[in-house]
Length: 474
Image 1 (cartoon, rainbow, N blue to C red):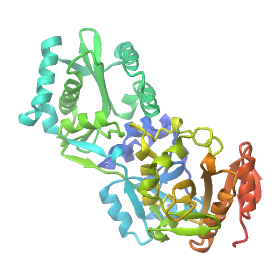
Image 2 (cartoon, rainbow, N blue to C red):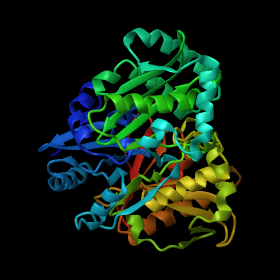
Image 3 (cartoon, helix red, strand yellow):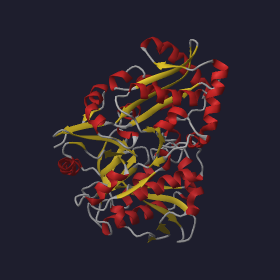
Image 4 (spheres, one colour):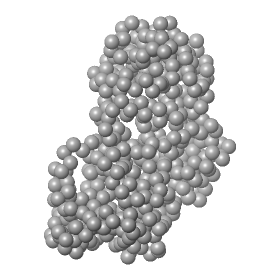
C-alpha cells in the first residue's frame, strides 16, 4: 500500500525533481506554492515507481494530485487500492484542462464530477510583453514606471541576498502596518512569505528586490518551471508610487537574463476573490485565465435528481434555491448556533473577499457541483422559506457518508431536526445505497437526542465528539 510522507522542508526538497519536470500549466504543484500553502492542509507526498502523488486537505477532506512521473497509470491503480483501504474519497485537486480530459477518459475513474472557483484561476501573461510593457495597451503601466523613475531615479532591481534580510524585515513591518484589516488568508500568506525568504534558494526560487537608496520599496519571489515564470509573491510599499509595475517588469527582465532557455509565459497566480486585486491583474492584460478543477470520482451526488423533494412529517427537504441565500447567510454567520456545529466563519481561510449573502450559498453550490456534498434545504412547506440545512458529505469510495443537520434557533425544539435528519438518512441508505454515520459535540445534548431518536447508535467517542451509525436500514 502507498505510504505518504508528511510535509517538511526536507520532503519538499526531495520531490523537487518531479515538480521541475512536471511542466505545470497552473501554479499549485510548484515548489513555491506548496511551501506557501502547506499550513493547515496536512500536506504529504508519496513516491512509488519514480512517480509522485501529492496529498492535501481541500475542504476538510483529502485530495490528491494527478500522478506525476514515470508511471501515472500504475499509480492510479495504487491510489485506488489506497483509498479503499483507508476508506477515503477519491478526489483530485489542481486539475487543469488536459488532466481533466485524462480523468474523463479513464474507465477506472467512474462518474467524475468537477467544478472550478474563479477566485483561484491563474492569470497568465505574455513573458515578452511583461518585459517591455510595449504598445498602447500598456501606456498606464509605462506611465507608472516613468513616474517611479522621476521620483526615485533609475530602478535599482537586483537579486536579494542574506545581507538584505534586515531591509526585507523592515519593509514587511511597514507593509503590515499598511494592511491592518488583512484577512486570515492574507495573514497566512504573509507569515509563510517570511519563512520562504529564509529558504527560497534551497527550493530553486528567485527573490528580487527594488531598492530606493538603502530602502527596499518592493520585492518578488518566483520560480521557473518549463517555459513559465511563476510569481508567488509580490509586495510593495504604498508610499513608493509605481513600485508594483516596476518590480513586476524588472523581475521578469532579470529572470530573462538568468534563465537557460527562452521563456514564454508569466503566471501571477490567482486573485483569491479580492476585487481590487482582480481589477489590478486585469489591467496588466492577461492572455488567459486558467481554471483549476477539483474532481470527485464516483461521488454519490452523481446519482441524485436535479430537484429533490422529500416529505418528513411536518417538514420538507428540497434542493437549494436562489431565494435561500439570505437565510443561508444567517445560518452560517450565527456564531452561537454554529458553536456545536464546529464552524466559525471568522476562522475560515477559504472565505476571501467581501462576505455577503452570496458567499456561503456559492460555496455550497460549488461543493454540490463537485460532488463533495448533497445539501438539503429544510422547509415547512415545499415552497416555504428555508429553516435549516441537512447535509450528506464526507463520502468515501467504500460507500459511507456523514450526515449533519442544523436548524435556525427560532425553529429549534419542535422536532423538525429529528424529522429532517431521519429523512436524509433514509434517502442516503435507500436511494444512494450508502451507510450513514453521524457525530455530535459531546456538550450538545439536543443533537445527541436527535441522532439517537433517528435510529442511530453510539459506536465510539473521543475528547470532543460522540460517533454514531445506523446499522439497520429503515
